[in-house]
Length: 465
Image (tube, rainbow, N blue to C red; front, side, top):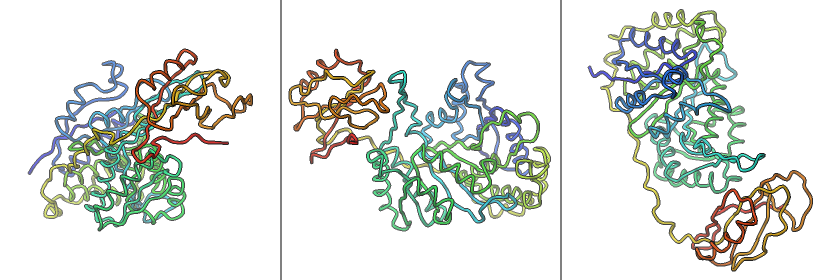
């Protein structure tokens, strides 16, 4: 029998308690897994000065698969999310979160069975943020063709492997026409490669409403990072909450599975934590490894335990973590009864390599520049024209201001001046504009404006009132 070595990160808060539950269940079930302990979280920060030691990253890199307990992320201060750091370190671009109704867990819906696939690295989670003025913080939303294509193709591959009927792209391309527009463009192109799977798309706000009203409308959903984070929690609410919601992060040859709930430090050490989500994440990991019979044994024992009324307090029962774990173990069928159903252990699923980055802009030409600057009042000394470039618009909050306007309704101390030309401009002409404007403005950012060969503007328009 092949044995997999899996990196186990117990985390902090309730992490060590629910991790111990999984370790005991796996041992009782004789799952062919051996654990390699690694560490991340607050204890590492206190001991080593970093929340993720290099030894932990080396362990994941060596074993290519990990099971991670929850870790605490400070809000608005302190170190960045350990989860996000691990996803970026191993290019875990697909966050896979099944939402499946569990008998014995009270919820408003029955027979929910959908899978949400969330892009996991880009979007606002790239963490590229700046203070532009004392009153304005900027966060860049980065959507790329390779990143979008990788997660979308994975969603279609997953649907095909699991016999799913449809993949739905969730987006906001009616407003975010360039970023979400690119995500949707990639989805429609890749959908043509899977004629056996139905595909459609829906706006994220409508998707949230439809999930509440008609959740059966969805099967597999694929979303950009931020929308995926929000909608996946909504899906968890359909089946009883984050305490029963598993998750996995998939990359090219690497995978890290984790419960999606937090570390719950307020109940840590009290022995009342609910390990269900972590157990289901470990079950998801076993399916990823091809150990389907072992996964089904453990999940069936868990479901039988819940149906029989043995639950932790958050699910309406009175069992503590140890009692709940022992009940699951007592409900495990003997391994000999299902051994014949086990498939040979497979290598972890490997996604296709990311598509190569475009090396040429294919005729893109510079036609202008947006200049962002700090000012307490709309400036009155900007030149109307410098060479071929003329001042098209002065805006605030993305809304055009009237010329010489003194109306200060809702004005921020952060403005944008857009200079454009009817024809492409040279680097020298662009430099001349910047050299004339820079001494006059407390500028924060220059953004080049491109035009495609057919004349299409590759930048969003400024809104008019």
